[in-house]
Image 1 (cartoon, one colour):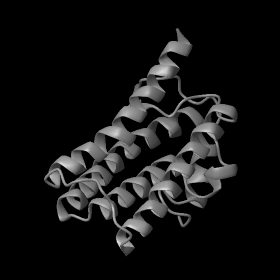
Image 2 (tube, one colour):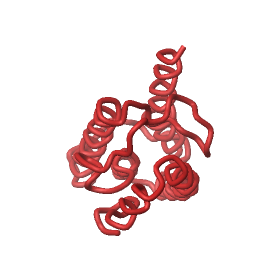
Image 3 (tube, helix red, strand yellow):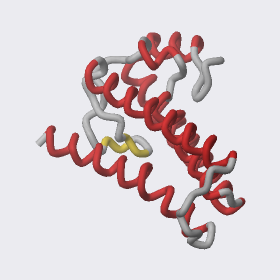
Length: 163
């Protein structure tokens, strides 16, 4: 059962963040054709998309190996098994939410590829919603890990390397 929930969590995350949000951005942008040229926004967008994906995948692997859990947690509802250990090393030295930082970068790259204000609005709305989600998650982490989490929180920023 745990393995099914874990697979469901990864699949749901992929469908929501890697496929769903970019599809909403594309629809909001008026369904532009996806043939890309070699303009500056396409080159920079592709670099940012891949940087964000690399950071997110690195975080998922680290979370699975070190934290012994899955990232999928939605507004204090456990969709897949929570991590069993507070992760403060590796990619988590960058910030407290490196997977979300990677997702923000990935979607910012999509904004550059679509090059529309509508996709930028979707990105901003997503960042705001996820900031509320992270606030909820931080309360759970404080309950689960206590002072260890509070100390970690003082040392690292939520989405940036700076507290």
